[in-house]
Length: 220
Picture 1 (cartoon, rainbow, N blue to C red):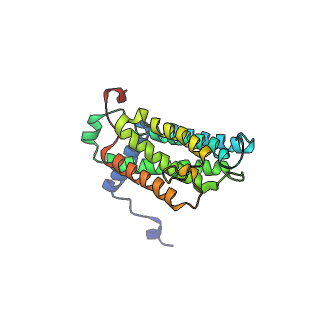
Picture 2: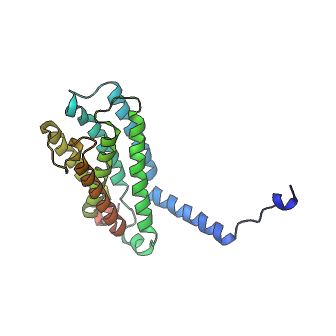
Picture 3: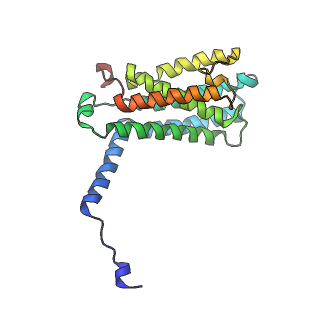
């Protein structure tokens, strides 16, 4: 080994500053959207789901057994939807050229983290219909939350997911077969997967491009 092997040239100052400023921007965006609190909420949802399965909170079997997991999954989605709220409103829209990218990666990251947290929660437990239905529910209902933020603003983006969850409770009992009631359908149902993924893709695209609605009640 020579001296040249031990002494490595430092990274260019400009590149270091760009990396540092990029990481700082991402962290400031995450903090302003309460992403750390959302991560904690997702972990709590995973723990509650595990407790529900371990202590058999569900009433009945078959489709009825999906009701409690669906409520918990919607709670996780609500935590994601609320992170769409930005406290700075129009000034941030005008000056934040990286804002669409931050929206996109934050939404995708939290969706994946929600599936991971809930998946860890059901590890070793008997979840009716399996992990695939759980992932499909999170993906589709998150799309509904992102779409809702375009109309109501981030602080109320949980309202449509909550309403959809209440509707699906009835659809579960009635064993509806429509693809747009994807929580009712089995894991292999292609139409249900298409419906959930289309809702998520459209919601993610519009949320990335336009961002949540900014209004007086959404700037607090």
